[in-house]
Image (cartoon, rainbow, N blue to C red):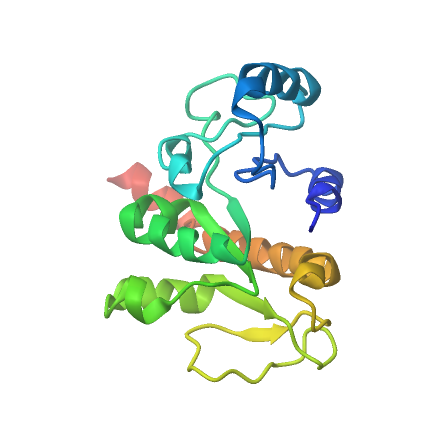
Length: 216
């Protein structure tokens, strides 16, 4: 079974805050549920690591409105607008469902989505919504099992609405670890592009503009 620990460690090293929506622990004894949750809470309480055990990404609907940020002192600072997703297998299907259900919140706060050998179906889930189709085209990338080297364009049976590249392995269980370095490079590039666009939209005050304000 794929472990998420390397992904979490890499995210923390890159100064991300982390929310684990499916910790791959799907076989907890119901009799031990309370004890397990208590142990989980004790083991993960850290100022730099936020973890949430959830049945699916749909439970992320309400936290998405205000993700906790470290060293925040005001409600405005407490909201995170730079959110990235890594989804594997069925997680891709659930993310697309979240995108449809919470369209504007996801589109305004999520800057990149890395899908790994995903089970989503754009046609069935997003339909013909032009805004959603345009958004995933610019914010999603999928790494699929393939005999091709890592990051090489992968051949797909169905038409894809966003870039699809090789995960560098033909084994589904190894795809996340094989593509991890590439995924974080993608996140870094996507965030830099978003920041550049944001700054380019901020008006630069010049002497002439200052004089016009004063004369007005």
